[in-house]
Length: 113
View 1 (cartoon, rainbow, N blue to C red):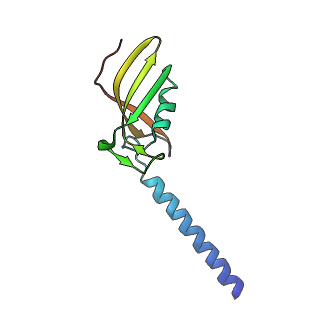
View 2 (spheres, rainbow, N blue to C red):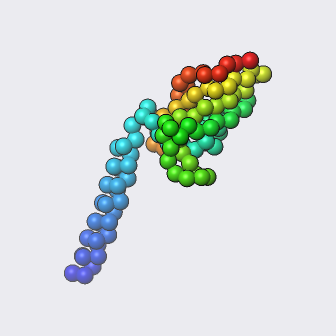
View 3 (cartoon, rainbow, N blue to C red):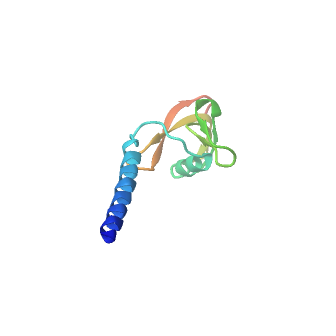
C-alpha cells in the first residue's frame, strides 16, 4: 500500500510540472511584445548589420533592475556597409519558436549618412 501511495505522489508531481510547462508555452503567442535585454537585442541585430548599439526605452516597457533590465522598445544606432543610421526604433516580439524573439522595425527618428 505504501508503494502505491508513493507512486501516486510521484505521478501527481509529474502531472503538475507538465501542466505548468504547457501553460507557459500557451502564453507564448508569436508576434506579441516580449521583454529582452539590450545585449540580446544587440546580438540579434549584429547578425544582419556590421555593428549595432541599442538602448532600451523605459517608458515603453521596462522590467527588472540593473544590470538585468529588460525592455520592449529600443533606440538603436546601426552601421552597415559604411552607412550609419541613428535613432532607429525596434520592438521586440515573440518568435515562432518558444523563447525566441525577433526585432520588428518601427521607425527611423534620425537619419542615415
